[in-house]
Image (cartoon, rainbow, N blue to C red; front, side):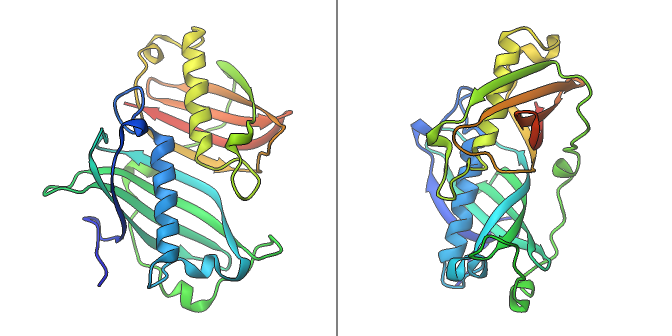
Length: 257
C-alpha cells in the first residue's frame, strides 16, 4: 500500500542522516539534499508501481534541464528523513517533477522542496515522445511561493569570477558533471568571493543558503575549466553564470537567509 508525505506526495524513501553528511553550518548542505532527491527519483523508478519507470525503460534516460530548490528546516546529525515525489505535468518529451524532504517524526518539518524539469531521451540520446499512460500519472500540485520568487535575471556586471578545472570525481555515469555538483560550484564561488572581499558587507557574514535555482544550458565534461561569474542582487540574492571558454553552460541564482 502506498504511503504519502505530509504534502501529499508519494513516499519513496526513509533514512537517517550521518555525521559525514553535515556541512560547515551544522546542517546538510544543498548538494547533499539534491543527491538525496535524485536518490528518491531512482527509488521511484524501482518501486513496484513504477512511478517513473517509463523514463528509464529499454535504454531510455532523463536529463535534468532546470531545478528550483527551497530549503526549510535544517537537517542535522541523526535526524530521520522521509522523501516524496509526484508528477506535476508531462509534455511530449518533457516532464516536471515535484519532490520534498520532511523530517520523519511525530510532527514532521519540511526540510526541502524541489521542482525539476527533465527531458526524456531515447537510446540515441534524442528527445522521445512519452507514452500516454505516463501522462495520466500527472497530478495538479501548486508551486510553492518560495520557488516562484527564485528568479534568474540577466548578469550585468560581475562582482567576481571564480575558475576551477572539472575533476574526474564530478563526472557521473552519463559522462558529464552530475547536476548536483553545480550547487557545490556555486557555494565555492561564493566563499571565494567573500574571502577576496569582492562582495559588499551584507555578503561577508557567511550566511547559509536557503534556496537555489539552476537552468542547465549545455553539459560540462571532464577536461574543461569552468568560470563562475557572480553579481549580488540586494542583500539576499546572488546571480551566477557558469561558462566554459566564454560559452554559457548554466544560469543560476542563490538566496541566503
